[in-house]
Image 1 (spheres, rainbow, N blue to C red):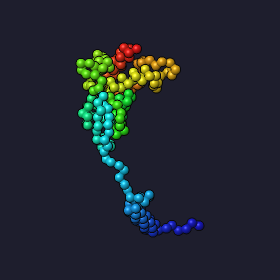
Image 2 (tube, helix red, strand yellow):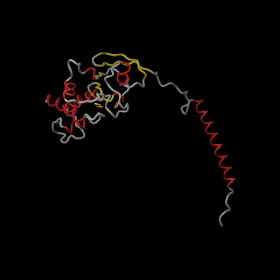
Image 3 (cartoon, protein in one colour):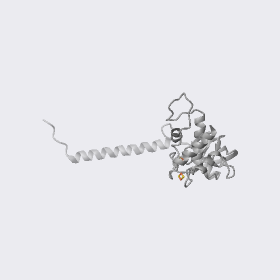
Image 4 (tube, rainbow, N blue to C red):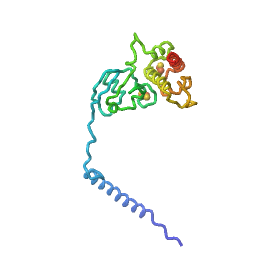
Length: 219
Ligand code: FES
Ligand code: FES
């Protein structure tokens, strides 16, 4: 024979009393922990300075910057050095508008903190050419109408130059078939390697034509 059911009021009171005791215990434990500095027993300490002085070489010129440690390389270029050619599209590593070169390799500068680049060589679109003497990739983009609004274009051009360097260096991509053969700048290779650079104007076919022309000129 089963025991009689416990009246609801008793169960509710028991629950409330138990919950209250647990909550008070947690608050007391939290206060004690805060006063003692946490589990380690030492007081909570600041983790370091808020800002750091970093020296970069940007487009051949040495630059010393004191930046908030949270400053991205992109913001250091744009806000501190007024090099606004490098664009901020998504600020999340998804569009490629912020592509520039660091020590010869392309990066998304929005994903990298300026303080990580002490002593590094940074090259932005401003360092590639001038209106009178364009870099071959810049000239090819102009010749093939590789842009419409132009917002993505600095990142596209910085990326495109790096793509041809990567192909020449034999760095394989996701679509490289024969890893033992010389890699060619085929349409598929260029499209795959440029896939991190988004163009909302949809100038992709002309961008491909521009990069192909430079690849053929360099062959
Ligand atoms: S702004 Fe850096 S990837 Fe979009
Ligand atoms: S030219 Fe406008 S986003 Fe690419």
